[in-house]
Length: 313
Ligand SMILES: [Zn+2]
Image 1: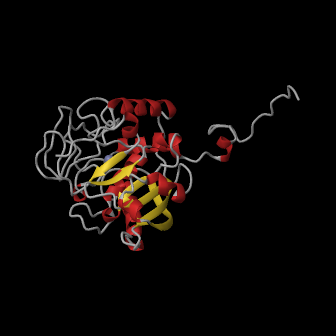
Image 2 (image 1 turned 90 degrees about the vertical axis):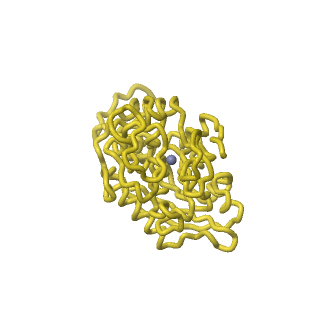
Image 3 (image 1 turned 180 degrees about the vertical axis):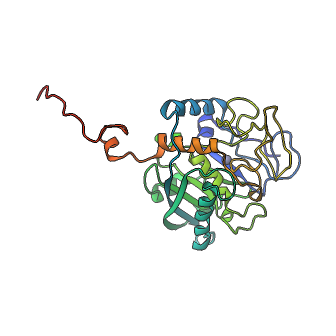
């Protein structure tokens, strides 16, 4: 049995991971060989979630829903022979899948987020391709593009147990180089994994990049995932169970939510509460300031300011 790897709070807080089809064992208490999470615990500790929620409440208490487009710099890692390239067709389908999922076209809320493919580049390196999470600094320093608003999306052989990793928006301030998402090249639409071939690994990981936690974060305890309309859930969902209800709080477990661990063919939705958190996180951590804001005038500054009295040389 694999046990949950001990990681520091800061490391945990800075990444989320999605589990895939090849896992051995297992979360504590589970004995079956099934889809679950194995080595890399994604659970952020409750203090981090509470801090994150409070910080966002202070910075952006509310925000009217707005449409915005995320430029995507897609970076393909392959082995030395070029193996592992998903091909342009599947990359385009991945962008389409992101737009469908975040636009509410698979069900659930329209988050207002849209994605536009900015660029695709390829880098061949056996070691980086085989262990992209362990070597992320080595290739990210070469490949990453843009600022906080640009999604740097990397593909490589992440694994069959864990299919992806992401950083949280708060982490960018201290680690701008690492900001981004890594997904397994087989997780793009049309991949070989049964139940994980619709491209929802990227949808899930990009949810973390946009500020969302897992629906099962903190189990049945407050603050949960920091979102009001995702019912609390004691455990990650495996497969696509009917009627799963693990907490006393109102509502069945959100097994169809993109921020769960369910199969791709079970997932279909974000909630309005998640859309709101995405919008506020974008405002707080990723939106490019306007020229006026950059000049220190603030978003509510009048177009023309009164000239201050000259008080000195
Ligand atoms: Zn995750």
